[in-house]
Image 1 (cartoon, rainbow, N blue to C red):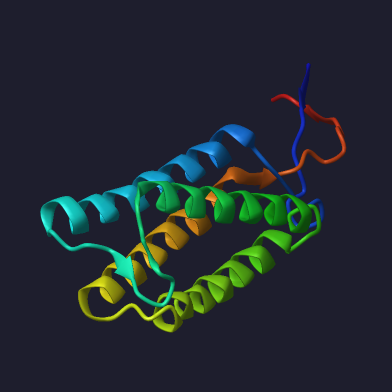
Image 2 (cartoon, rainbow, N blue to C red):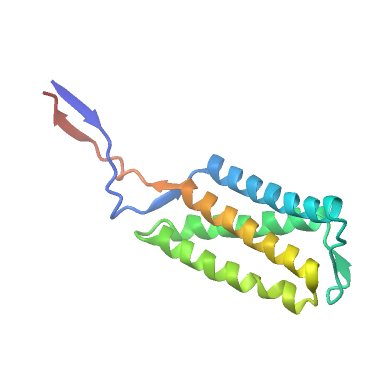
Length: 152
């Protein structure tokens, strides 16, 4: 009796991004950012106004930033993930981009509580994107190779 299964060789085939979990990661990142924004503005009464930018941070800008950053991260993961080790390189690059993004609120003139909230929002949204998108990348099938094994 024969048993047929397809088993990927994860060391040499790269990864593909599953759209459902990747979209869920983007949604979770948006929700995380809006949660921080809501807690700071509605519960904390802190107006998220950035003097250097001449504007306030509202739910639209939180949503747009999380979606645009997430879409760019998703695209980069889809490209880098095709090669062996690409998912790890993508995660490292994501951490570097997240750390660099922390400079934005500082140079925009945010200070005090506003700066803390914006930095926290960057960290939370970035972490949700990195962890969620990384989990959405699964090993590619080994080019459809079929493995036939004898059943006991």
